[in-house]
Length: 259
Image (cartoon, rainbow, N blue to C red; front, top):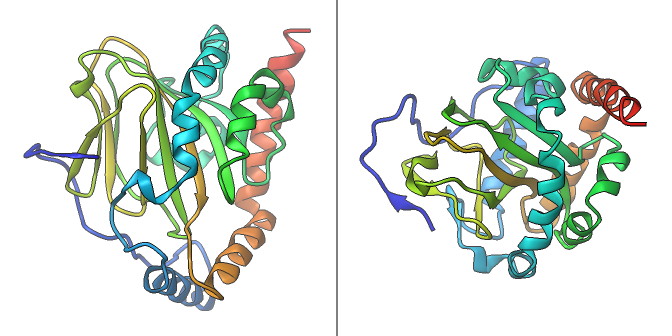
């Protein structure tokens, strides 16, 4: 679990519950209500970081983490040609605009990642054990990369990180979630709510890589069905269509050059 820290951070506000200013007023009001119900009817108490024991599938992934690392090592040979996060999801350019946060998508909400998945069959097999998984990719931070304080847009998912390549000194490769600081460890898991304010530092001379997964927040019936509906409807939004187009553009170029 996370360790405490007195490190000063920027914009370390508690909860994220802004109006959905990207949507018409009535839809924004509805989504805010849905989020309030997600908090109220969560199976697990609302908190920034969750006990891994609450999620039985975590143990199997940790036991087999070296299989994922082996496939990652092959992917890392192409690191320079992998897409930046903001190349795929353009809204991410509000927190990063350089070439120091690379991604390799294995599952994307509305994205067909079949070519990438074929390169990482053991990883894909393990991901299939995560209930209601929606997104999965290798998140690759360059040395001395800082991701400033930010918050996720919707509380219907929880986030999973599995440490895969964690450079030393490990304490200098860390994430703040709300008021807690966590330093990743190879083969170890952190599960958190990304709608808490958080930021990331890799203050080392090495690359940091985690397996980055979003999965549906466990909710009581019938709000689990409502949450699933909201996520599925989002597949038809311009945001998701744009993300899919950006990914396909990179994928076509990347694999064409390797034929």
